[in-house]
Length: 275
Image (cartoon, rainbow, N blue to C red; front, side, top):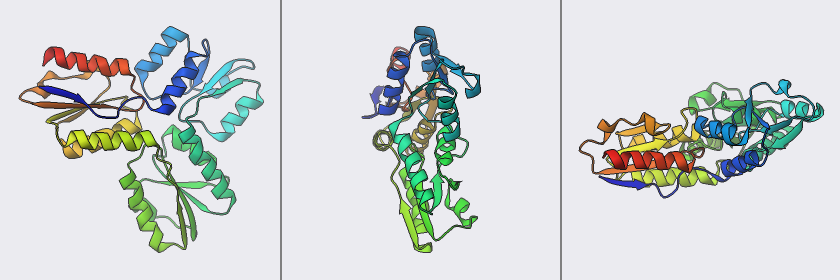
């Protein structure tokens, strides 16, 4: 069986940056999971003594708090600074972009519409920057149920599928006086999604590696599954079922933006050894 990795996969710029920041700040703690990959978080704790705190109010003055890649709610960030905590901001620059847009557009009087998952930490943070509030949608059906102003500004969660984002934008444009659509989907997301489209149309079986709570990995799996029904989302080699590879000629592999190379290599090695 041929095993091939997608042209683009794995750690994105923002995650690489955050990991480097965490490794340079030993004995610190991240507020919330730094990235959506439990194995990598365990490695940082073991090798660099970088812990995990779920409640920002537990940080004491002088302690070092690393802000996670997905960013945090604006008020919480302000409170951390005001309380004398040593804040190390590892928010991905691709996430700070929609935060800034939401604040600017809200203050300019626009209705702010965010395309993404309202329960996701990135969107909780982005929404908090809209001074006069924002609405979060995931589909045209969500939009149909809203009463909106004539002037709308749209941003998207950095890891969403561009086709889904444009579907909502194209619905709004002919129905409202002004719709400003900002491209806030990051380059790595575009590249990884295009790469998995290319490989999944050729593959008999697809393996997508990443945290089960990783939004961008879920999007990769969705694209792969559209083209290759035998697609599987795993966190590491322990999730592999070798029956998946019976009578298969071509195995394609991709990984989410929070998946480290060492996990990807473990998966490749396991498949090669058993198949």
